[in-house]
Image 1 (cartoon, rainbow, N blue to C red):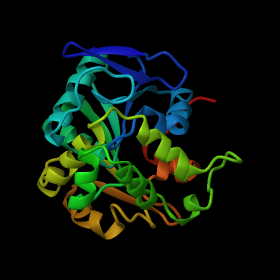
Image 2: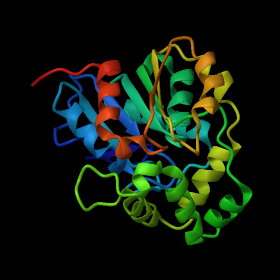
Image 3: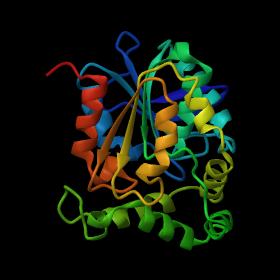
Image 4: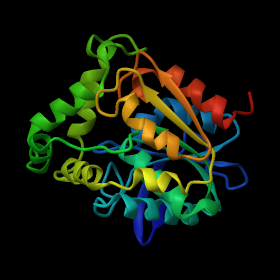
Length: 267
């Protein structure tokens, strides 16, 4: 599905069903360097169980036009504009990593537009090592290798996919390689510069689920605790065997947590 947001054409997957503003809306927002495809299994379920779904490519990512946005708060404002562009009025937002920080900002700035909030792989601060940041900015493949390695738990390093013969670590590497030059560096710099998560969380009115990986080296569970404590209405679920990429490392468990929190209807 193509959507015009502020004059820029944005691409979004709908989970195999047409987007219908008469149904409750779910918007999935990916993290640094990725695109909508990381949400494939979860998005498809909700699209066939009572929701209208948009798994988006942020500007400058995937098949979306425009330039990558370099500030987390501005991404949050852009998501609010996206909600308006869909005609839905409001939506539940599901964000991963940098995307989690962005939807947190949307919920804080535009509470009337956000029904529920889900933050996956989130932390109060997401600092990026200077060497990794430099590598990403210079489009050094080492940055992709480091992110793929640190972003997946131990099981994913040995295979770990529910689809036989598909290696999660290599799949993540290939997905990051698809990003346009400069996009990964832009996104990591935006995450590194963002320092407002705890203060922003205190302004959120939406019920919020924090879905965390017990083996997450990039946003460890303990790093999410100040954020959890600041959120007025928060639920925590920890997937013990998953790393940072829980939607692909533990797709079933991730879906179970989302269904428990968001609800699911239909056959």
